Image (tube, rainbow, N blue to C red; front, side, top):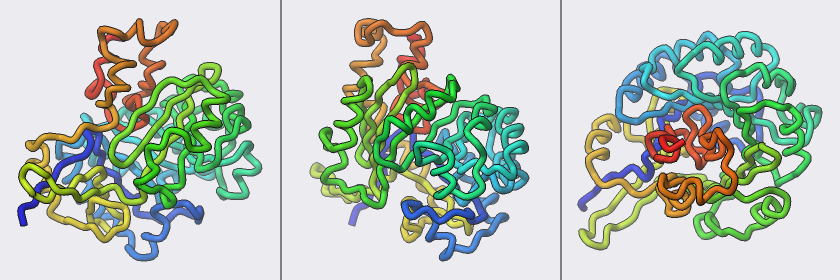
Length: 344
């Protein structure tokens, strides 16, 4: 059988599981179970991270586990990543290490943004889900862009909580529980959340790829998105012209034991993926979420001012460009995928 590998999106990132377990056990977490199956191995993770960071993939996402629990180990991981990469941190942002974490994030140029989990209308309710987290006011001390990830039903109370914080480079993302994602309704525009957000917020735009879907809104200067995704993000299809089997890879993962794979379940492991990378970059890429016609209509250079009513002076902010984060909320460099930023 002929087999071909393609990256489904230009912004395919290297996502590395922090080699220490998280103190929380969120029911919707897609990585918690793997920490009982794969024993963390710091040396192997660092070795694998160093190899993967020297591929053409532009971004590295460090996720949980809990990266803020051990800032010294986080530093060791970021240190092996080349300076031309964009690093993003997914965290619950713990109270016990907040001072050290804030200082490090603010002063490390490789770190472009921080994604913080908060799921409730107020801090006290969040503390019933997430243990030992820092207070909202401490988030304002992070100078880098911050995205609040809320795995929750849409709530104006959540939107207003973060609007009241007054942090300029902050964005809120309502996220569907990935474990409940299904291909047949991934791109359905009229689900309850999209309708509720459209009734309360100003619609800005929509983007999608084969495994995710994002609708962007705005409320009093605060950008709010609704993001849906699938529990598994590798897709196997057949090319009708060649009859070849095509494996579309949308995520590259380094697990906490140092193994690497191309999907979240830990079973789709290819430890020789480094040999695949040069080939995959030579084949035609499948259009990804920042290449959609909707995005072009909003952000193409010629129609930029006509497409956005009353664009603010910093229109790159309007387009969702926050410290290297693409319009669709992905972890790619916006400048590399959309000429909107160049026009701005």
